[in-house]
Length: 188
Image (cartoon, rainbow, N blue to C red):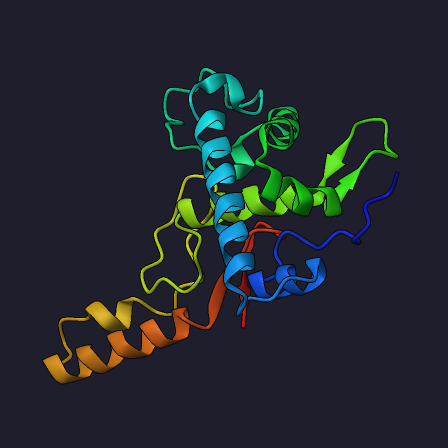
């Protein structure tokens, strides 16, 4: 059976997620259910990052890849198994919401609601929260495009012009954001 609510892209906002499921962010009960779903996803993430066995084959045995692993480093098979496990272990309150995203028409059962929750838990735990001021590159993600750093570090400039150049470089870097769906830096 197709899910009662059409799937929502993982990159969509919490507001769109609530809207798609018919939930209201101002409703205390809905917020509590969302918090329970988040707890279940956090626990799922913990299970998914316990050993290197969860990694995509190309990263297994690579000593430079250390936990916590990013969502992109974990095999789809492991993610799918965890989605099914979260559904199986779900509280009655969260199961009702998960049922809205349950798709049993496929060869492999799928649940877009749980997948969305897991993706967002990984996103915020992987330092991918785009609202953060500091952007820290990771091995699987290149640094954002960087405007002329040479002008910032030039010793021929005075302190005030260095400060201005650094502020300008920072402002230009803020014009980029990491898009995990495209797996690249994008210009705003």
